[in-house]
Structure formats: structure tokens, C-alpha cells
Image (cartoon, rainbow, N blue to C red):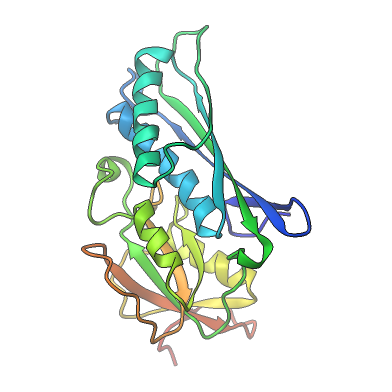
Length: 257
């Protein structure tokens, strides 16, 4: 089936449920000789797992299994990467999630390579895709960070699974989209196009909405203007704009004459 602007694949499993799949890849980030960004392998594992889990959770699905493809040796790289994956699963109360794991046992490697896939199930009436409408406001939860900026999984400025679960429970929140390499603007424009609207940027927003958010360090969501969002602690929330009626005139800047 697929959904434009979303990093998930959704297919009907039966008359009542959807099968939802999301994946994330990570290359040259770790402790290998030729890695471009040097971080501990457990960080590589944790942040890559977080991306795929967030994508599945954001559409209303419940993770059922995880696949971890590690293009490096079992020891030490594989073991350290898996420590991070397990840490992220524990943080999301998913430590018992079934996992298929593969490592490279034949060839020596000089760069870290990792791919993680999460499979989930979603009742058809709970799928959170295409619920946004013109007139809804767009918000960003968390800050866009990339590379070494995103090396701390506990950074209070970046999105974690617990924040997404909290957001899912708030009435009046519609589409939720973790932001990746195309940045906040890219995700907002894709969402607007998918629901027959256009993205009207808030002229008061001071976020860099063109910056990559790396391993989904923030998300965007649609909601009513006057929604009560509750307390997300130190995690920043910014209004980035709204969805405008698409009159064929291209993108708008909010408050533009």
C-alpha cells in the first residue's frame, strides 16, 4: 500500500488489521577505523533502533518483532550494538520483543554498518495516517540534531519513545511523523501534500526547519490550535505552522498577505 511522505509500509493483513513495517539504516557511525562520526557502538544501536520503533508507533501500530542486520563482526561491534538496541527496547518496555539478529562472520570490516527493521500490527480503525485536515496546526516536539549532536540518547532536547507514547494518548492529536534527514520542512510539506493541503509556515517560528533531524530527534504532529498538550518536561515544543487549503498557489508563509 505505502503512504506518500511516510517512512512506513502498511498492508492489509485481514479485514481488521494492518501489518506495518519500518526500517532504518546507519553507516559510518561508530568506532571503526573509517567511520565518519565516532560514537560508541551502543549509541549507534540505540539510536537506530529508536528510529524504526518510533516510525511504527507513530502510526498507531504495536511492535511485534525486530530485525537487526549488523554488517560487522559479532565481537566487539555486534555485541556492543546489541547492548544499545536492548537498552532502547527496555526504555520503551519492549525488552521481550522477538528479535532476529545477523552479523558479518566472514569478512573483516573497516566501517560500521547497521540496518534495523520493526514489524507491527495495527487495528484498521486505529491507523493514524491521513487524519490531518486543512485548518489543523502543525507542531514540532523536540529539536533537530544530527551527527555528534545526537550522540547522547538521553539528551533532554531530543525525542524519546516515552514522549511519543504520551503524545498518542492526547485527544485531538492527529498525524504524528518522526522527522529524519529531510528535515521538518520536508516532512511538513509531504504531509500537507498527502492530505490535499499546503504547509503554511509560522513566521514566528525560530527553529531551523530545513536542518536534518538525524535519528528522529524530533517529530511533527497536527492538532487543533487550542489543544492542551500537557507536560513534556524539558522537551521543547514549537508551533511551526498550519495546514492551508490548497488553492494551487504553492506554499504559504503564515500571516503572509
